[in-house]
Amino acid sequence: MTFDVLAEPTRRRILDLLRERPRLVGELTAELGLSQPGTSKHLRVLREAGLVRVRADAQRRWYELDPAPLAEVDAWLAPYRWMWADRLDALERHLDADTDEESDDREAGEP
Image (cartoon, rainbow, N blue to C red):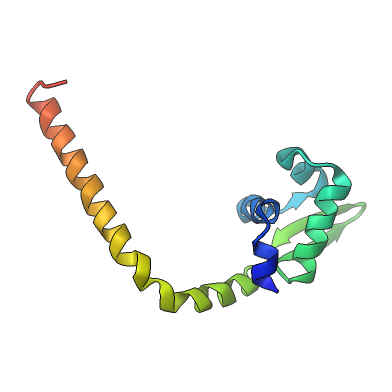
């Protein structure tokens, strides 16, 4: 179920926003450019999947990230990390080499 929920880009964007801090529905609606009912539907799906908690504060409802289901996704992905870890290490080495060359060029007075 978690993978189905995460497959939707708007829901992933909501999780990104909630990663920063808890938010009200109105804030999420403004950030996403959706209608309030549209935002609420996505929040309901996220809540039912256990990815989001809601906390009532008088008339306001604060939504916040619940990272526990994401740990399950992380555990599932663990055996596959080797597939991209070497490539990311190679990319980092390549970028570091380019940065070193640019620094050397600047020190030598080259544009």
